[in-house]
Image (cartoon, rainbow, N blue to C red; front, top):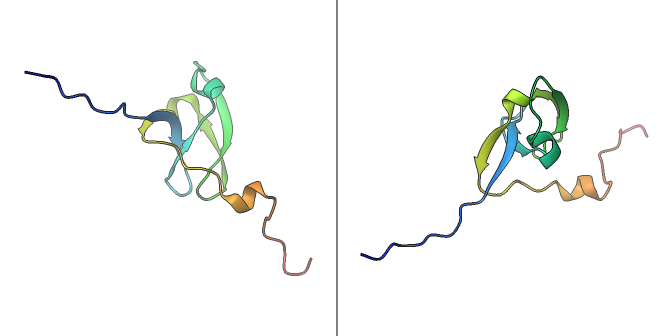
Length: 82
């Protein structure tokens, strides 16, 4: 019987945002750390920053969410009085 080949499943290492619960990828450097390290990471979904420990890193299936275009273009919200 012939074996059916399926496309490779993409995955990435990341953390679940402590504010909105969406997965956010970590850099390869952070993903390979071991021990009692902590790091700051900005969520790609809600744009809030959180502090995480290496123990919170997990593997997620699929491809990571991209950053919001407005954020990359520098079009951040400005205060109403300014």
